[in-house]
Length: 329
Image (cartoon, rainbow, N blue to C red; front, top):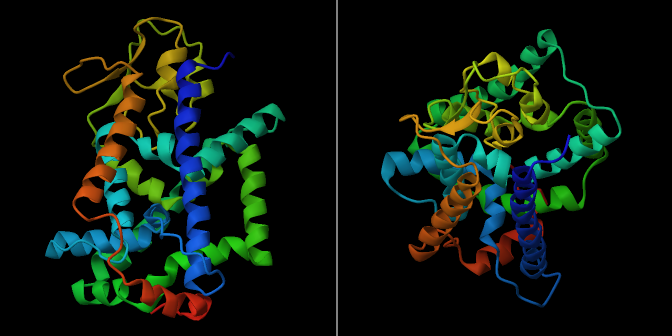
């Protein structure tokens, strides 16, 4: 099947965000080198890396809701987290489908698996039980953070030495992976070759949270059953393996808002992206809205001082040299 233009646009947008994350990672590596005393060259700490700290962001969000105080240690992480939730509420799981660099790698792995002829869809009796895993993980984190932890406990964690160096520990995790880590990553890679988006579909609690948010979102793909010829082209391109031809409205927690199904449908008007008023939304407005919302959150955060951490550089220089030794509180 010929690749739809919207698919190429999604690759470009998601690939652009992935390159931005790689650049931020490299700059953070340079900052870590300076802060840990391994390099005399100072490079400003890139705030973007905080997007990879969703647990800290969830803690910061609860504290913000209860006190009105923004996280000062990882403010960009909280900004990105709220931005992702906003996308989920208004544009399906667009963060997963258009922004997330892990999703981008997962998409590329799936394409490789398809080229190699390895891609298969799990039978329902196996798919649904495994699908529950990420929701169980999400429930665990929500129970610990949203239910068990009060403001004092949250603030004790947010201002702990561990949270101050958690980004450095994340960097060291990737720079010096253990044998077990490499084995787990290898298994996930092989699984993703066979089952499309294995990590995103079955194991990512972040995606589970965004999927729940997307359930109440206003936008959805609607199907006119009287026009459908059951060619299943929409299902062939769907990265979430949704059975689109069995539904009149695709209000599914796994829908990542790629809108590729709408574009590949050969029957004009059969599939459409619609708002609650039944007004049809141009599919090419979708990526513009995604990038626009992310850009808006970044701009407001920078202008209001909610992007860069209010942590003295000397604190990083004191803690980073022994970051790997700092234990979880």
